[in-house]
Length: 219
Image 1 (cartoon, rainbow, N blue to C red):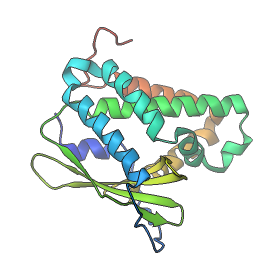
Image 2: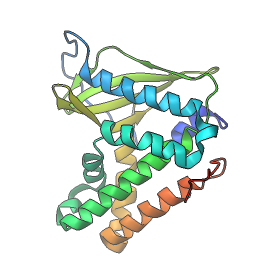
Image 3: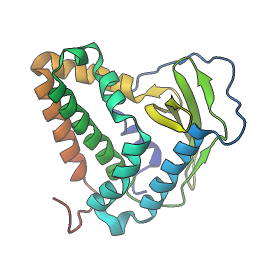
Image 4: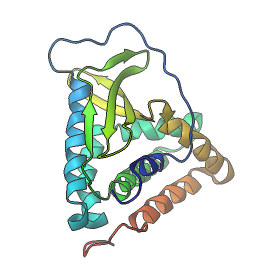
């Protein structure tokens, strides 16, 4: 990747809020762990996209990652959690618009930040860990040189259907916690319409970010 991998991963989050999640006993399962399997599938797609990054261009990376991100992340729940209690006061059409723009911004973030490949690999622990709020899948991004970077995922679901509801950079920095204060400030000053516009602008900026080479299909 063109810029330090740790810096690019840090840019996935707008700040650094440490969030502890209490563990409860358990975690071992018989047979393949479905939460782990979901993350491994996501990583396989992400790695394949990184290896084709230059050829795909920013729009191509977005289109390649969009289906797997929508399948892997519970973007509706993440939008609702990031906004907080104010969510319940919004009209259904406002909630839908916020979710779609949050989704677009999330996909654009991955398409922009994972813009190349230089020998990185992902390691995923074979079993997830039971928590009071779901299950944690522990992973590491191993660069070709330098220290591994911990990326953990809070998953919720049942049976074979597990989805990400939060991401912890370095194992402790919660994506949703960092976004909550930002979103609350925007909603307080301008309501849901202002937050929709902010999310739209963030996605647009990511899609034309420096180093993100446009291709013929970029709009």
